Length: 21
Image 1 (spheres, rainbow, N blue to C red):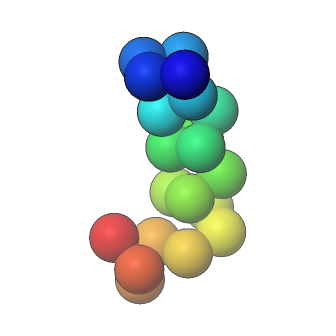
Image 2: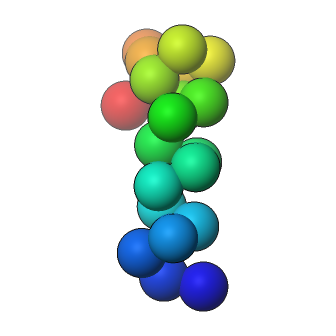
């Protein structure tokens, strides 16, 4: 929980809710 988690959640957030930043 920390760097590895931010790695996967940042991947889907970019194509899922890019408007949410």
